[in-house]
Structure formats: structure tokens, C-alpha cells
Length: 349
Image (cartoon, rainbow, N blue to C red):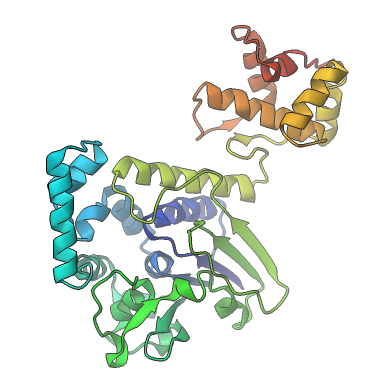
């Protein structure tokens, strides 16, 4: 059986729907999906077969407004209008949070009401599970959908997302709960214990990254952001869209075994890279290899390409042919930087 585990990390969760679509394009089908915090929300919709609705949600979401922040404050935050009225609105938001003894979660509840269909999720053959912590005794709880009380599935998901700065409300069984990420942000063992043999994990690199060691040696494929996803609260919708695309291409890099770190390159044989550097001045090679902390010819060329591409603000969201990119940089204006010089000295024959 093949499983998918989605890590918690707030608004960075948009990355996971991009990753899921890349996995889907590769015709990878899952028998079960588990998650913590925002990963639990994403997992619930994926396990319900509602990935289109989930993508639409992330493309249109306003995190600030979901958390009850003033619309004008959110607008000013996005547009970097840090004037006196911005400070006043921010202070007003803070006073409202203090008066309410935390951020009102009614916006989160509304999102779940709107997007989650409990009956569809229960009927679907795909496993679904979440991790949360019962606050009374700090007991970690791993719960699958068949163990959840009828009509309470939304409350279980909320329990997995409950951060300390939210307004505390009793949910399942008249208990308070805490975000499962404080115990296990990547609940791989939920699926391992059910006999899953291969698990894809989509990480978000949150500040609090508490994971439990897998209980058995199985195949685990990790998809990790190669660039920063931003904070747990992201106000700018363009940043969320950027994270969706990043999730898609980072996943494509992993499952298609593409080369590159921040950019994606078509794979060519390693020996070709050894040939390409043969006529480069020895001193220049050593300088470049030292700069990138590598002794590997392939890695030196790929990192040099990425360095130049980044300087030119080239699109991250394409799959590049390394031959064509070397040729393009060689033809470009003669930059005096030693990295450019290194690439210009590459000879094909």
C-alpha cells in the first residue's frame, strides 16, 4: 500500500496541493492520507477526492480575513503600507484578540463547513487520519476516520490545528486540544502501523519541526521545499500561488529524478559533466569548486548554472536543458564574475 503524509505548517500548506498535483500527474495513487494541523485539512480534502476544491481554496484564500483581521489592515500589510493607520488597525486587532482571549476560530470553522463533506470522506476507500494532543493530560492522539465520532469530523481536524494563540474552545468529548505538530508534525507511523510499504511525505519546514522516528524500515520519499515558503501566516495571495507552483516543481524534481536544487534540469549522464570540465583552467576550477564546497563536476556545473540563472531572475517553474542553458550563458554579455567565466570555458568536444 502507498501512503501520503502531509506535514503541518500553517499557510505554507499551499505547497502541498502543488505537490499533490505533481504526484497525480505521475499517476501515483494513494491508499491512505494522514496529516497534522494544516496537513490534516489538506489530507481530508484529498482523501475525499476534492483536490480541485482544495486547489481553488488555496488560490482564493485570504489568511488574514480567515483569522478575523480587519480587511483594510490585511490590504495594507500586502501592499506594505506601513503608515499610522496600519499601526492603529494592528493595535485594534491585538485588542480584539486579547478581549476574546485568543484569535477567534469561527473563520476556520466556516472554511471546514464550506469545504468538508463528512459523508463523502467516510464513504471514500482512502484512509484518512490526523494527529492531535489532548490538553488535559497532554496525551498525543492518532485518530483514523473510522474512529471519529459521527458528525464530529470537522472538530477532529480543528483539534489537530489548534495553536496556543487561538481562542480555546472545547471540541471532541468536551476536551481542549492542541495542535498535533507539538508532538508529531509528520505522522508517518500512523500508516506504517497499518502496513503501508511506501510513504510519500510532503514537508513544509516549519519553525517547530517535531517528528517521530519511523518504527519500521520502509521506503519513504521526502518532498521538501528548496526555497523559503514564508511564515505560518501569509497575507499576500501571490506568495501562496508561488508556493503552490514551488510544491509542483519540487515534487516533479523528486519523482522524475531531475537535476538541480532550486531549478529543474533534464538529467544527462554524469560522465558527460566530467567531459565538459576537462578544458577548464585548473585554477579556475578549484576556485569554483571551493566556492560551492564541492569536488563533484556535475554539482559544480549545476550550481554554477543556478547561480547565473538566479542573478538573471530566470523563471523557476520550467524544466531546463542544461546544454541549452550553458550555451545561452556563453552567448550572453561577458560578465567578469569567475562563475560566468567557468561556464564560458566549458567545451563540448
